[in-house]
Image (cartoon, rainbow, N blue to C red; front, side, top):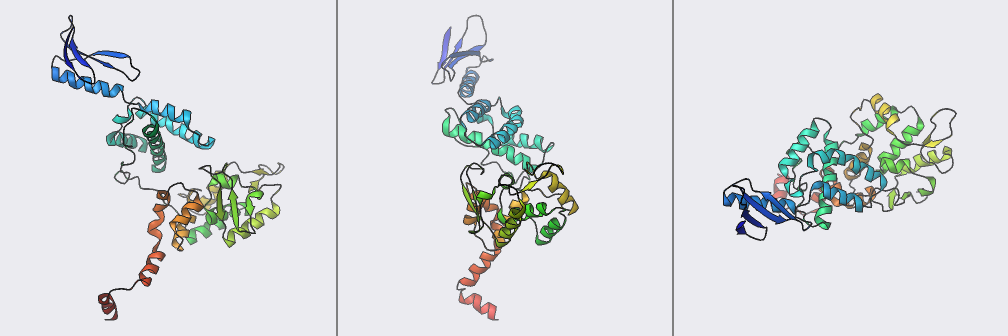
Length: 350
């Protein structure tokens, strides 16, 4: 054996019974790896050494995902959702190192998924991918320094966020399409509080403080695990008062699965909501859009984004920035409050 090149990555050498050059380096576990460089050219063999060394010392997506799920303390519902997303992410990225996942790989993944699902599902897939990247970058050696999902342009790929919300006319049509009072109550409270579907289903009477016009959600019910105070509009208070007049035990929103069955909490709103939206001619509407409706109405009425973030229970300000373009009232108030230059006043007078 004759060593032709040595550097911090390893060695390039010859073997007596081979015309090809060979490379030798250590893996992440410290074990020695020997491979044929599949070339007789020294420069090509050195490049192969560096490439193989980099690959051996880089985390694969699958390794990062396994570690992420082992240490995460997210709620069970979120964990199940992330696990479902992983079933679609792993076939594309599982064997790749994190360093190999770049814009082109993301672009190919999105193109393939768009043949199967809508943009909202793809955005949630990318959110899970981003979470695994962030975990690896913050806690695992061998991870890249940059999360490629952060710089990935969803706009270029026509994955603009879905910001569907009800107009006043659509809201009235939706209520009129309800055949049961309880369905009206659920939709009304959803649009007037911005609470998530899971929070509404788990709502119980001890959480209601109607005298203070607020709902106190315990951390075990919220998505981020933190307790949250949800202020109530006067209409939301009146609606909840009506609900509580007939609601049995501690239940708030309830139904009977059959005429003879005992009252039970809703496990899902999808069944009745699908029928209501179709009767209202709003087939594109999802229940989650009622949450967007509250946020949009809040901003259009002059509410600030910082308070909205708190009401909705978002962990980052970025989540409410999507509604900033609706805040025309604040812009008009700001213009009226400033002193315009003399030139502008003169033009206006003329």
